[in-house]
Amino acid sequence: MPENKFRKHIVCIGAGYVGGPTMAMIAARCPNYEVTVVDINPARIADWQTDNLPIYEPGLLELVRQSLGRNLFFSTDINANIRKADIIFVSVNTPTKTYGEGAGKAADLQYWEKTARNILEVSESNKIIIEKSTLPVRTAHAMERILNANDKGLHFEVLSNPEFLAEGSAVADLENPDRVLVGSRETESGLRARQEVVEIYANWVAPECIITSNLWSAELSKLVANAFLAQRISSINSISALCEQTEASVREVALAIGTDSRIGAKFLNASVGFGGSCFKKDILNLVYICEHYGLNEVARYWESVVMMNEYQQQRFITTMIKVMFNTVADKRIVLLGFAFKANTSDTRESPAIFVSRKLLSEHARLVITDPKALDNARTDLSDCADRIEFCEDPYVASKKAHALAVMTEWNQYKELDYERIFEQMEKPAFIFDGRDILDHEKLFNIGFNVFTIGKPPLKHF
Ligand code: NAD
Ligand code: UGA
Image 1 (cartoon, rainbow, N blue to C red):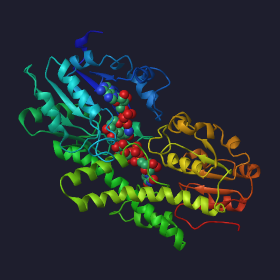
Image 2 (image 1 turned 30 degrees about the vertical axis):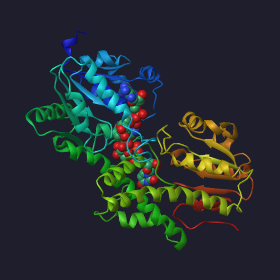
Image 3 (image 1 turned 180 degrees about the vertical axis):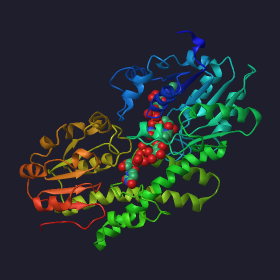
Image 4 (image 1 turned 30 degrees about the horizontal axis):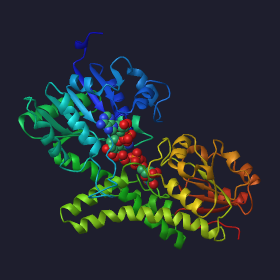
């Protein structure tokens, strides 16, 4: 296949949850672009080229297979691919800083800065550099300064094109996004680069869904979108606590308020708390930026979204211990689900991690089951794995159990044979539904004592 067969060479640095699926979609929809995803992690790069992808995401394997070896490639040769690229997406991880200035809140930009320096070192031609990672507002300014302080006479145009996909629905979100956001400098070269990026997405996204803006608005909009989404969950979770005290049902309240089109129906599912790699880190990043600009009231406002999430997780475990006669010591407790949401193997910041550690500290005998996330669960809890049973089969897991706790809203947990499960459990048998997904009346009639987030309890004592 001759090299000039392709109109442009796109390279993505970072083959993770965002880089992999996003580039697979671009490759599938833009056969005249060559798309190469590179990473420092050779195992990840190898796995992307097998049937055993490094992440579980519905529809992803089929999407990757469409283009793999045609115009989609995965490689560990970062330098050669940077050299060849016209357009570079940077999709490396930007976790919360754990050390030094801003520890616990600010974004750790070391991976991101290393890629900038790497690009600068090996490039031999002008390039468009796209921030795909979620970054603090005004990061592009720093990136421009690093990249354009070169004596090679090269020009790097830095753009922001944040990603809004959600895990578990990544392929559908990429296929049919609410919007694509492209932010650039509003200079002649900035606008030209903006148009090049818009042209990629225009291969499958309707023009009215492609929004353009200045660089800073694009960077900030990503943090604000996540903050608003998480704020809705914390808002409904705060109301769930009140529902449990007043015999209101949070699901009914959510339906009643969500039908107001100004409020909207989505993201009003009360839960044991939001998890995932981004909400907490991005809000804390927003808090840090506000503090940096002396906007302390604004910082406290957004910080309370994270505090409410911590309260919700703690409340779940407090209820468990209280209703199980103030002790879970030596009781067999089964977590149904460990992933931070359904349809993913990702467990980053999953509330199940917090709940597991609390149960272990109360000397419970912990059993964890999950259809896709058991390997990640083992890694997350590797320091105490010898005290945990990891079990594929929820029926085996629930044998002689004292309690079940739904941590993830996997569909299969709605369809389990709870009569069979009840028969083999210790009595009184408890269910704690952290996702409000089960048929609680039915479970109560089987004999369970049922405790659900945002609902009055159904108990036989
Ligand atoms: P990830 O950890 O799954 O993937 C990041 C990858 O970058 C890793 O495979 C790592 O090995 C690689 N990497 C790090 N430094 C590198 C370097 N110098 N050179 C080459 N590769 C390098 O992270 P992710 O979940 O894909 O998130 C990436 C970014 O996208 C983050 O900023 C995140 O906030 C943002 N984001 C994530 C999601 C999501 O759903 N996960 C959605 C939208 C935005
Ligand atoms: C979220 C955003 O939805 C994406 O738009 C964004 O791109 C992404 O973060 C990111 O920047 O990483 P994600 O974390 O993958 O996506 O998943 P969500 O569907 O947002 O769920 C996050 C958490 O909130 C999960 O634990 C989920 O169970 C919980 N949640 C969600 C609720 O508790 N209630 C709801 O109503 C919705």
